[in-house]
Length: 321
Image 1 (cartoon, one colour):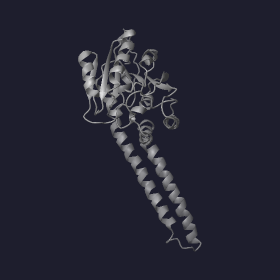
Image 2 (tube, one colour):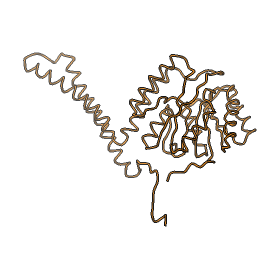
Image 3 (cartoon, rainbow, N blue to C red):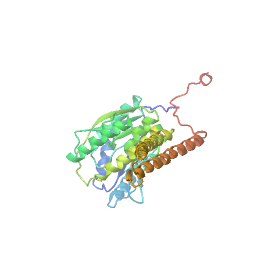
C-alpha cells in the first residue's frame, strides 16, 4: 500500500559530509530556519564520511544542543553512496531530502521539493541553474548527463545533483553501493516510481575544497553500465550477454568463412593471424553467450522466491465492507 504523505509528515534531511568543518554549523542553521518557518517537523542527519578535520566534533556539538540533529561517523572514507545509504538507514521520516554539505545547495529550495512530493511524485531531483563550477567541470557534467539520459531513457538534466527528495518507499526498494547514488532516479524509474525535476539555485563554494576530480566521470560511466544491466536486463541477462556473444561469434564465423574460401582456392591460411582472430572471436562469443545462459538459470531459480514488481495500491471490496 502506498503511504500517504500528510501535511505534517516528519522530514529527514540527510547530509553526507567530508572535511566540511567550516560549513556544518551554517548549513544546519539555514535548514532549520527554513523548516521552522514552514512549521515542518524534521530531523537533520549529518553523516561524517571519515573526515580528518573538526567536522565531527562540530556535529557532536550540534547534537548536544539540538534534539533534532543526529550524527553518524563512518570509520573511514567509504564514499558518498555509502554515506548516503547510512543516512537513509537511520532516518525516520516519511520524506527524505538529501543535499551536499558544501553550502552550494540552497536550503530555501526545500519547500519546493516538498510541494512536488505532496503533488504525488515519488522522487524529485534537483536541476542546478547557473552552476557555479569551473568551465571544464560544467562541460564534463553536460556530456555525462547527455550520455546517461540517452542510455537510461530518463530525460533528467542533472543526474549529478545531490539535492533530491524521496518518499520512504523509494529508498526501501533500492540498494546503494559504489557510486550508484547519482543513479537513484534510474533505479527508481525501473521500479515504476514517478519522477520529476525541480530547478534549484546553485551557489559557489566559499569554504573547503571540492572532493570530486576527473576520475569520478570514468567511475560514473562504469557504474552507468552496471545500472543499465540491473534495470534493463536484470530479469533477462541472456538478452544482454547473448547479443554480445552472438556479435563476436558471427564476426569470427565470417572471418573463418572468408579464410575457408581462400583455402579452397589454393591459398595457404595456416600462418595467417586472421585465422587465430576468427577462432578467438568464436570462442569468446560462445563463452559470453554461456554467461547469459547461466544468468537465466539463476533468475529462474530465484524468481520463485522473490517478487520483481512494485505495488502502488490495492483495492479490496471485502476490506471496504
